[in-house]
Structure formats: structure tokens, C-alpha cells
Image 1 (cartoon, rainbow, N blue to C red):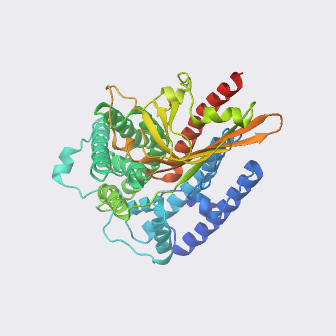
Image 2: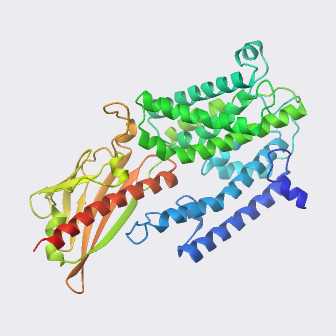
Image 3: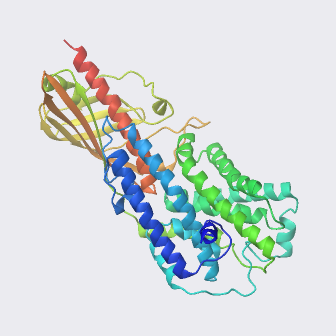
Length: 465
């Protein structure tokens, strides 16, 4: 049993459907119990099955007292998930091999909703031996490819890195420019498939070591990021935010590629087609586009206490003078930050303009309940950030229409001793996927924007006689 348990974590070998189903259900039950215990006992949070789509919860408020623990919670849950992800991927590879299916189909393991049907099918289909098939090289041996891919370790590595970076650039342009989609295909499927593809090309002529395979799977991402920066397609800030997710998936794809080529060069089986991995990401992105996924509307709340009564705080909520230049690194790096707020008119129907570093938010007032509640819709949104770039400015598509603030409000609550609890709320949505990853970034950024405004209002209200 101990030997069998160890084999479950390896890329080599096979597993039958009964064992696959039993281990899969048991692992998921164990993970859910562990996640629920961690969330409730260590972080005092509720954890339910749909939290796997929204790890921080749907519309979880980033109140001033919780911001320090939210990143710790997210990092803890990710650390718990890593061994289960590894087990799921290795077992899926073994089940695909036992069922006689292409190993590259493991990429479906990372596709939300689709993966549930995929895993169910793997529990149902029986064993099948693929005659005259090998599991390593991504295409049959042909003279053009034999001569095109260098035989030396260095030559094959350079060719693999450059070819993978070129494929990655082509898909990025296809997704962002042709489909205008910042989806799971771009941020999940592409890094994993590119890591796998690079190693399969690198090991075309002979077996390669794990260290060099891992390097070959990661270097193209660095080159791709640099190229996107140089040709003014993306800015540094967005590349850095996407990097942790992409690096992990590319490394996982590269590890799978290493295992596949290791098994081939050990077994010396006959040719099989794995070049289909090149078609998976654009096909998946096209299906995402056709699906026209509807974004969730998220809520972010932040609150502080002001040593002044609501009547005194109200005027600074409605409009406020220019805020001093930011010292926070996140704003100095290019994230849009508030500068001042002006209002035209009085009461419901008035129009508030909150000037940001990238332009104004135009906010028609819907509720004017002085001095308790100021609620507004958002008619115009400026760009959410100014990209860090070697050029004067660039305009990636995601700067316009992919992040939308829908409405906001300020709620003032009188406290004992002539003090006020001032709470700011923003409702927003974004069409950059996977939501669970980018939702964390956007919530944090909006909370920092709230804090900048709320602290300025507090300083103004407390400093005025």
C-alpha cells in the first residue's frame, strides 16, 4: 500500500478508473474538511463549496481591520491546495495513459466547470492500449523537423525557448487583439501548454534532465513579458501581477513535459501526435468568447473613525480639496489614484466628479441624505492604471472597459463622543479571468483607494476648527 501511495504522486505509470474515482473523491473530501477547518479555526471564516470559485467569498468587504489577514488567508489556502493539485494532475495523467487517451488532455483539469465533466468521463471510460504510440515527442519524426530542431543541448534549448515565446506572443495577440478577451485561456491554459510544449520541443532528439527542462519551460515567459513590454502591447505592472500565476502553471506544464519525454526515452515507444497542445489554447479562448461569460459584481467596503461629528464630516465627503501626492508604492507604480472631488448642484441629481490621476469618475448623485448617506452611480470610468513602459504611454485594451465601477456610497454613522464612523463602498465588475485570482488584486487596489480618500477626509474634518 505504501508503494502504491508513492506511485500516485508520479507522472509515470497508470491508474485504473476505480482507483482514480476512489482517490479523487477521498482527496476532495479531505481537502474540503481541511479547508473548512483552516478557514473557521484559524481565520474565523465560513467555507462552503462555492468558495472554490471565490476563495475570499463573493463580495467580501476589505474593511480597514481585515486587510492584513486577507493576503495571509489567501496564501494559506493556496499552500494547502498545492499538494492536492499535484496529486490531481499526476493521477489524471496516469488515468489518461491507462485509458489510451492523449496525455495533453490534462490541461482540461484546469478549466472550471468543464473539468467536472472531464473527470467524470475519466471515471467511466475503460482501459485501452494505444498500439504503436509513444507519449513523448509532439509530432512524428520527419526530415524537416529533424533538420530544423538542433541536436545539441544548447541549440535545442535556444530553439525551444524562441519558438515557445513566438507561439506565446501569437496567442497573446490573438486573445487580446482579435478576440479582445483576457480570459482563462490566456492566464491558465496558455502558460501550462507553453511550458509543456517547450519541453517537448527541447527533448525532440534526446532525453533531457529535469533542471534544464524546468528552465526551458520558464524562460519563454520572461522573454514573452519583455517582448510585450518592448512592443508596447502591455505594461510592466500588469505583467508583474500576472507573473505568479503564469510561472506556477508553466512550471507544472514543464514538469509534465519532462515526465513524458523521460518515459519515452526510457521505453522507446513509437511516434504519436501531441502537437495538438498548440491548438488547445486558441480553441479554448474561442470557446470562452462564444460563451460570453457574465462577470460577477463585487463589493468592497472600507471604514475608519473620525474624531468629528457627521455634520462636520459631510462637506468633505461631498467634495474635497486636492490630496497630497501619494507615497504608496502601488500608486507610484501607475495604479490610478484619487486627487480631488468637485460637485455641481445640490441634492439628488447633482453630479460629482472625482478626479483621478488617469481622468475623472463622473458620478450622478442618487441619494443625498445629509449627513448620513451619499450614494451615486458611475457614468464615466477613467483607465484603472497608467502602465509602466519605456514609451511615453501605451493603451492596452484592458485599460478600457475591462474594469468598470458601477456605483459607490459614503455612509456616516454617529458615534459617542461626537465621533463618526465613515464607511466607503464601491460596487464593480471586471472581465479579466479567472475572477478568483484577479478579484484579489482589484479588491486590494480599491481598498487602498478608499483608504487614501477616507484618511484625507479625516484629516480635513479633524483639522478644521
